[in-house]
Image (tube, rainbow, N blue to C red; front, top):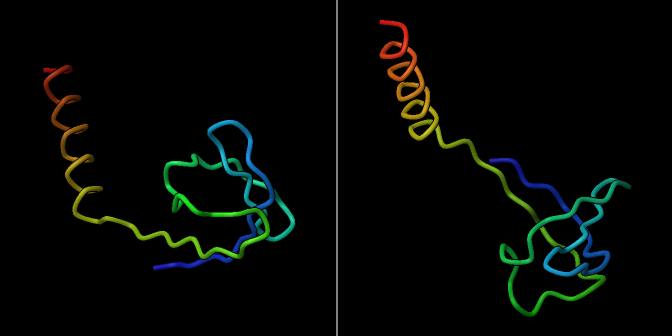
Length: 69
């Protein structure tokens, strides 16, 4: 799992603008806690779901096989 630190820069409609390493990113407000505030430091974690990835790859391969048969 990889974790990145960011700062809540501002809110724009249903988006939260997060600054990470000098760049800003618009992320959906729905993924944040309801009480998040401008200036707070947050940690964003990402993790690859290998099982889901493999299932999607298999589904795509099966669809292509069906299409080209």
